[in-house]
Image: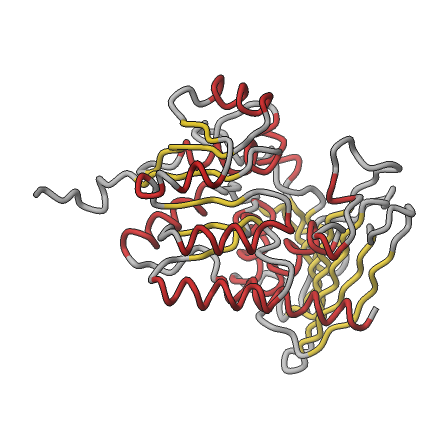
Length: 350
């Protein structure tokens, strides 16, 4: 029997859920990833089924997980992008069915649930990985370069913000109206990204403090401040996530012993996807020079720092290498576990 090399092998992916997450943040990248194919999507929504047929005519559609699992041997990887409260149970079901699994953020609702999935994946010899695609944001990759090249000297404070303003939740915006126990709220949503990026840069903090606040009377927090303290390096990381901020600050503001780096705008990938630009486009993820961040010395702008290309596609390329060649997954599930422990600690103190 002829075995294809890992270079040639095509991984069949089933996408579970086709809301905003599935249609914008996952399907285009699975479809664009060389050596992967979007083999199937699970959704019972007729409008979404129609959209899939138009965008991905060769992709099979299942009405339910149960129907898909009857054909489980046809798939290598399941990607879960359903409401947050379903993540743990659906990931567990897919791992037990013998599939590798990617879980959109938040990975689970509790650290204990995350630990259970990690243990199960190890026992089954499968990979379970959180989809923290914002490690591949243009602004974050640029910030990493600034730190790696020591452009501001020894860093002592990083401010990281994702701040939006909506007087009322958007139609169908369940994350803004669902209680935290069911996976709603800004901590699980935008906070997941900010916490993960800080962990990726600096590791687990020595201590944290912060505040979760509900400002619109929707029954769940919509405004977050969280501070990480790193004693050995005397570094503070301040995270801000909000749905009620009329005057949003810069995406990143890094202060160091010899200067500062300020990046006003966030990554362009989401806007490009919503505009119908494919991840395979040569200009995808690139930012105009007018949006590049500033390097400041003595309070004066000394240089613009060219923004790296945003590259969420790299996440799926990394997953393919992890499944076929035994490389580490693009984001470790232990990082998601650490992030959930921090979220739980914050909730205990608020």
